[in-house]
Each structure stands twice: as C-alpha cells, then as structure tokens.
Image (cartoon, rainbow over the protein chains, first blue to last red):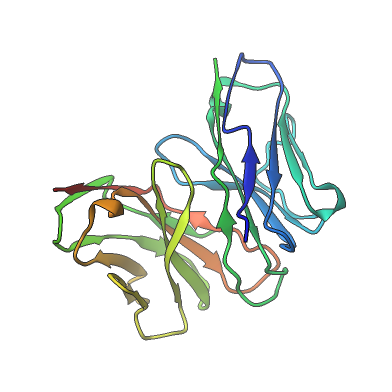
Amino acid sequence: EAGVAQSPRYKIIEKRQSVAFWCNPISGHATLYWYQQILGQGPKLLIQFQNNGVVDDSQLPKDRFSAERLKGVDSTLKIQPAKLEDSAVYLCASSSELAGGPYNEQFFGPGTRLTVL
Amino acid sequence: AQTVTQSQPEMSVQEAETVTLSCTYDTSESDYYLFWYKQPPSRQMILVIRQEAYKQQNATENRFSVNFQKAAKSFSLKISDSQLGDAAMYFCAYRSFYGGAQKLVFGQGTRLTINP
C-alpha cells in the first residue's frame, strides 16, 4: 500500500511570495489533515477535511492560508503572501476514519520544509 | 482546550539500556486516546504506541511500553534494550474520543540520542 505523498520536499521563497504544497493521501482514506510543525515544536493542526468538506479549520490563518481538497482526494495548501514566521515543516496525514466514527490511525507523509527569507 | 507537556527536551541512553520519556497532559474529558510518535530525521511521523484512556492495562508493543496514570494525567514511554535506530524525536499526543474533529494535540517533543 503506497503511503501519503507530498511535494515538494523542500521550498525556499522570499517573504511576500506565494507558495503551494500538494498532498496525495492513501487511496480510499476519507479524512485528510494538514499540520504545521515549527522548528523545535510539535505539529499543530491547520485544517481537517472529510472527503471534500472542511471539518476543522479553527487554527488556519485564513487571511493568508487557504486549502482545498477537490473531488475528495488530493489536497493543496497555499500561503499568500508568506511571512518569515511561516517557515516550518508542513505535514499531511490521512486516515480512513470518519467524523464520529471508530478510531483509525493517521498516516503521515514526509512533509514539506518551507524556508521564508 | 487540551494541552500536552513534555518536560525533557533531550534525553540520551547507552545502547541496550532502558530509557523513560515523560509526558503529562491536561483535559476535562474522561475518554480519550494517547499516543507516542517517533519522528526520525526523514521527518515522517511514525506511530509507536497507542493507549485508550478507558483501558486500565498499559499498552505494550515489543520493546516499547507505557505507564499510563489517568488520575495523575501522566503518560510515559519506556524503551527497553535501546537500539541505534531508536534515535529520533519522540512526541506525545492526545486525541479526543468523541466528536467530529479528530485532531492530534502534540507535545513539544523529546530528542532521544542513543550512545553506542
């Protein structure tokens, strides 16, 4: 079974530029998560999708971050414009768990390391 | 809101010895899950062990075991017979049992070094 795929692995941009990250979850997984992991900290959830609907985006800075999951499969996370404090690793995870359903493990991708100069 | 605290930024242990990583959490919920994740330099988060709060028995997975103290809100990870491949960042995480959102709330992490 293929794991969660993310691209690119690394990205360096200047502040105020735009950037987009892509995630392809494990086939058949209904739920997709984006986490932000700042250096020296644990990951923090930015947004959770179930199929193509948003379940939780309470910690997403909506003035500059946006995310979509068209057709309930792949997802894209965008930052526009980027700030220095957005430098972090962006992790995508997926699970077959449905909201309110029994537990199923979240599987993580390798992440995208973003550096904002 | 739930919080998770790992008070040991770094730990080191000799190969083949035992090490314990600490984690405390705060919640008003009675049912929840607790996890330990391993993050090697490749950055991929790997689930090490899971504990359901309603289970009194401590979870074990081969060389990994936990000491779950629900009243004290403590959840420590013991690694026996440490191996070089165990070197990584270890994160303790909390997840609500109920509700539509299943986000993981992570601690700050503990960097584990294995000395040969």
